[in-house]
Image (cartoon, rainbow, N blue to C red; front, side, top):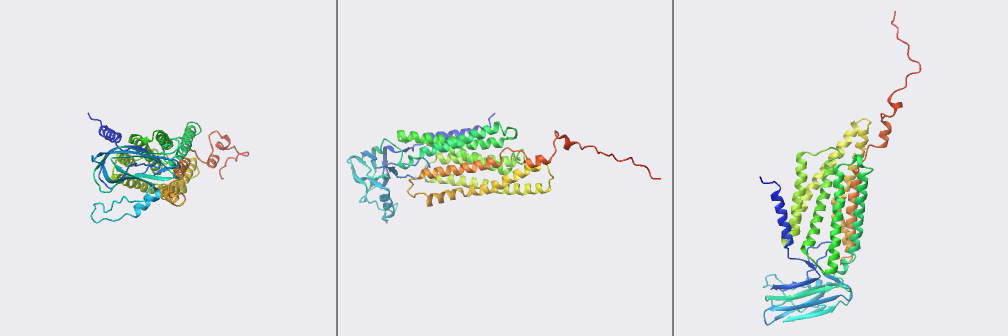
Length: 450
């Protein structure tokens, strides 16, 4: 008999194997053995480790950084004519992108011009070998300009390295302490929350609080992997797709756990009712499974069509957000109605706590939806557009997420009724309130009227 989970597990394993065989790596040193026939080619396609970028970025070098190139032309045998290796700064690359000449005959509608202002320029010929130093702190890019667009097979290595043997881009160096600080923050919070669940809140904890703990620990696991990748890259100058892909998959899983926590809280699971309906369970499970598959496809995909997986994932999460908004407003209205109709009791005190929690959660979720726009505005207005202070953006992003998680956990913490309701309601141990005192002068027996 075939197990229902077999095909699902096989598909996940196939995606992971595809990721393992993924050829692209992130490197400040690249070994080249390829054949090209296009006019422009990035020889060193560096990508920022944190935050992950989809497009190549310029490598930031401090003053004295080393730029090395050693390329040999395998084909054509006589060497390559009208072909040059250029080292460009950020401003030079920007002026090239703005000042491109249109072509009426080329397929890409662009003129390949090798007469460009560059930081360093060397003809390819049969072989090119050079090493130059960065004269100032700037971003650099190494490109191959093939003026005749002839097929060229190159073999060799290109490398950029900061002083002291640092393989990280200069703007990524402060990212290590930032990741360590956020890692300790999430780990400490997870440990404190665990101690509270096993001690003070032990009698009132539920499975929902286990999901909340999973959000903190999964984020800490992602930060551990990101920090480990940063250290490995700093030492070796390269990072395989398997290492970066594992870190990305863990972050996708963290996003799914966080979305599941927000959805379960909005539906009132373990807050207003002990269980969900079958329709709600299927909806939550479907959102998580589809989001996981789309995340795997996005990580393992390579090419211009990969943005479709990210867009599909955003649309899926937007559907869950819509459900959360409707459920939260319904719960606030329902609690308000029950409080107005209820009498004084311990259950009424719990309803007051839940109502305040859902009111806080409603405003917090609005902020959660606006978080991407707010962070983008912060990055464009407050931070430098050149990206030298990306570590500040990473710190801000992690702190904002931490604030959201902590407020949700505190709003729906394991708690009993309000103290005022406990004081008003008599308990079994209170003998004075439980049994009324006998009257001092008992009434006389009634006599029948004559």
